[in-house]
Image (cartoon, rainbow, N blue to C red; front, side, top):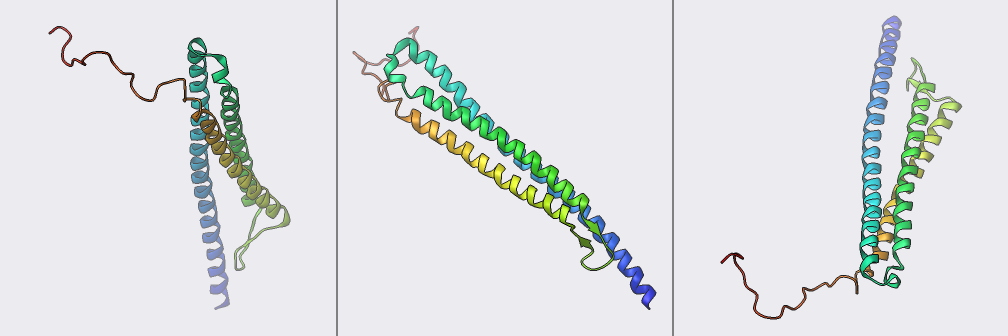
Length: 180
């Protein structure tokens, strides 16, 4: 009877090891995919906004007084900061994933319930992973805040540069083909 119990414990430990390894791998893979997609989106919106501001700036500089463009460098700085923060979020995610991988590999699987023990070094890597995750999320949120800040900085810029309503047209508006 005791031999059957020991066999069961060994089998349970093997199954737990297989489950732990597969679950950790899948969680890691999905976490990386979601984080990478979010960071790419942040880089895209902030970088795209910076490029749009530069295009707008060169266009407006040729047609408007430079005093009306005073907030452009501030907005460009906000968008550039957003790109840098998104890059920092990506680095923090990389550190977190490495730490989680070390946390998992340093764990010791046992035949005793709960079938896994985390030595001190494994716990340290786990906490580094958690800290890096929090730092990455904070950088991502700050990147989004930088985009909003740049957008709000530029929102007042439209007043006086581009008319919001169509200009009045002298005479009747004719619709139809030009060749009529």
